[in-house]
Image (cartoon, rainbow, N blue to C red; front, side):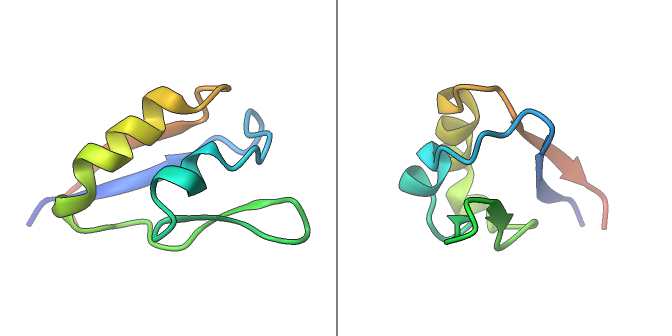
Length: 69
């Protein structure tokens, strides 16, 4: 079964929380000012919002891939 996998390049990420505003079920910036991925394999129903988060990221740090797991 193919699942969507969310990855973040933490070397690029500035934890500005744009992605959290779009998909709070997947992304969270905590009090330590670091971004956390809450669900690396979210349901396909979130794909359009995740794609919006990818293109909205000011640092282009987020990517989506197909995971054969």
